[in-house]
Length: 496
Ligand code: G3P
Image 1 (cartoon, rainbow, N blue to C red):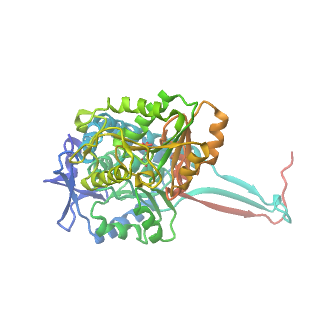
Image 2: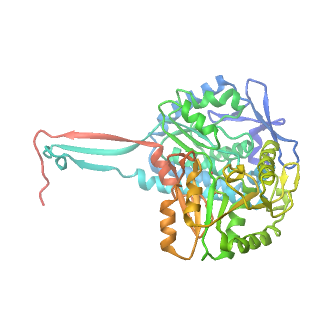
Image 3: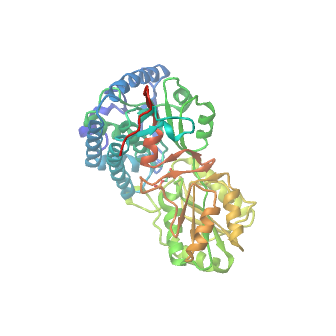
């Protein structure tokens, strides 16, 4: 159970503590932030409302710890990460329970998130050992005008303090996707969890604590965005920011100083369906891609662009599957569970109503109870409707009927987002041409968009992000190149 057993020390009374200097502490503010359970809509947990002074101290300790950590052999860093991964997996049940209560993620998916996170940490350890264990050797005479008088040795060195800000939808997994690469590369890590998902994050951090990481290397500060959000992201002690979330990322990137940024800010992933597509496969992928975790995924299918000639049949097949989705509480492992907050539910409702008013066809009756919104396929959507462009982050999927491939590509590329997209066709040549024409970081051929497996590159174009994620890319992003040049008094050429 959450907050018990090995997790007992992370809570006092009703309020979970924050983590710094290898200890669990109460904030001097004496204040807490309530976490509302999306299902019951009552306070489920409370976390510390940390102050700016506490953030300063956290970053100071983080700086000191990083200097020592950078001197720790790579194999030892990897060993500790493997240990943390094992502890995390061992305690998957209480952490998954937090996810169910804080973000209403279905019970089985919550367990999957924790297990996937353990695997991700282990993979980071292995990949780090491989890619950080080698550098480059360059010689000078390849550049015009030079003799071989200079030998250049390059290696990858850590950036310093990495600030990780994951979103509510994968608080554990998208936290470790930042923590693992940062630590293996020799950085220290300050985690600012999302409010909903914070308690799952605090449990995950305790697993790193139990693994025996040095004091100060990992910290987790909770609190109000208005109080410590900008303060953290603009803090001069932070050397790198890895953020996943919404529009806030655009604001952060404007305010952050001279630090490398890794940003993933959402998407409006298009699903282009050609006449020759396997419509059963498409329907299954619209269900999986559009409705899993009630559509609250950056990579969810957010608009279906289907050729008019097969649209009726596809809509019929999707509707048959929508009818089978189980709607209800996450504890019962329902497919569709309450969305994260009332304001989110209101926003989704606003998009649906706008489409209805402008003449779209609701394939199911619109139904809502609190934060629970029943799955809805909206057919005959047109470009003048908000749902054609905006990201609902909820269980509603718009269908736009198209008359040419170009029309589909045009709609996809007219979006300000460019995360992923997908195309369904049996013609691989057409699929490649369409993939090349789609302005998105990834295109899936004959499958719904998805981030994983977690070592694949993951990136968005335009407002969808900055840089590329995926384990290897994240490790590289959280390092910089250091060169040492050996200058020889006379040219030296190696004999064969
Ligand atoms: O931010 C990425 C997340 O929303 C989607 O991840 O694994 O569901 O494709 P995934």
